[in-house]
Image 1 (cartoon, rainbow, N blue to C red):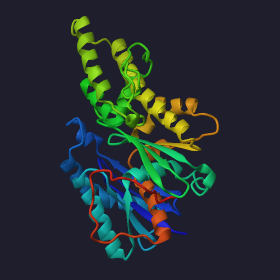
Image 2: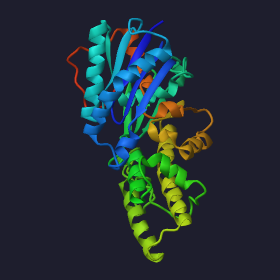
Image 3: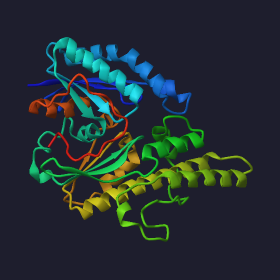
Image 4: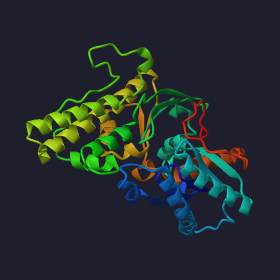
Length: 358
């Protein structure tokens, strides 16, 4: 039995968790900074770093207490190394280094993006990753910072099929919410506002799907772009406000948000299922903060073909958390692959050629 302590501080959630043997979540403590950043309409890196400094010690104590273990019983410390906001990452990384050094525990560096994929297998996915018949596996990671498709083979080799060329889906939702004066963060408030709205009333563009009257370039078959739909929303709001004498009725707002959300969801599902068909995958993983969206989850449940197993991350594991870091870190631990005290954080997602959990 192995106990891994996870530490997460890549953006605006501070988190600590204890996971047993890679899958069993004994505790998962998360402190959100939404209220702190809402006044700024987005995450301020320096503010996030200060909040991480304040929250980490109490969260560590909570995670250990809930799990019923002590630091002496923990076998290793896993921490998010990147990608993310450098000021925020450095706080968690240095905190984890101090814990590992102080208690004589191995240190494990985890890629935040890969941890999001692994989140879909926490608690209920034991045995899936070890089964060669689960592959090829296609992972859609969709969040405020990432919208990417990763193809994973049974030997652990991975290939990024596509990514966003501009805004990530979560960023497109956040910016739309800000434009409409709905608040921050955009994803949850957009979903709530869209409830009861007519998603077919307005036709927003579906970039890079070949539906704009010109052929889609082969190199962009699995790529995403959401800047165009965001710009279309801006012009739509101006036009409708002018038609309504500067007033934006509630019914118009609900239909607008529902139609905009539909465009984002449609592109995500359409691109993912196209890749699934092209590469004859056995399973589809959907994870990341935007994977909390009820419309997106239901659309994948409805449209994923028979013969392809859908792995939807539990909502509590979709947003940034340390359980996914600890769980992913366990796979490094069992192979004895540890990080040195001189490791540094990184902001951008590097090219991924392997995943540690296969």
